[in-house]
Image (tube, rainbow, N blue to C red; front, side):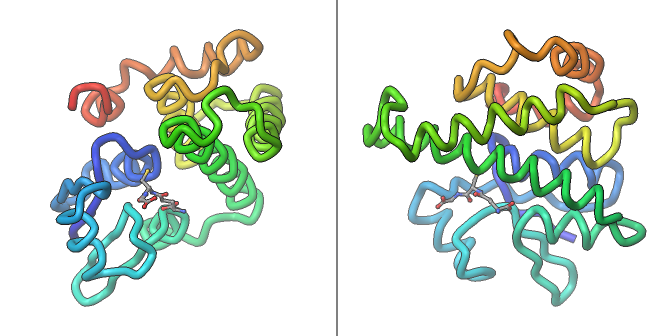
Length: 184
Ligand SMILES: N[C@@H](CCC(=O)N[C@@H](CS)C(=O)NCC(=O)O)C(=O)O
């Protein structure tokens, strides 16, 4: 099994955590270079990472990969929570790109404001939720919160003490250390 991704993507990191001790190759590509894009284009027209190659099967999109790797079908409530985390991550990625490409550096436009509102609402939902186990849900959430910090996308700490405590519980976890985006 081969995972194609990068060390900085929150979508890839969540799959690296899920794969943990499963035997696999990690192929690191830079999706923002022509070479990286050409390599990814051999497998998918989405032009996105992560990608999982398992024998003759190619699976793209972290949500589908997570379901493919799970030992049993994911419950609907879990899927709904994963979609919320994906929505929050996508909103953060859009904010990051709007700033980076100097389209909306100060989040003044309606599109940025909608994304900020979506992030705040979803963070409030998870602030109120009991997060006790280290599982797919909490791994996905951790990766997105940490990516928000890493890329200075959203200051989530001030208003979310329970999420801060959740984050602190897992920040020394061995797989979290091994997949740290800042090392690279
Ligand atoms: N819905 C996708 C999103 C993946 C995604 O957006 N990955 C980013 C890297 S963080 C990417 O490949 N971006 C390439 C691009 O935007 O061209 C998933 O969950 O896997």
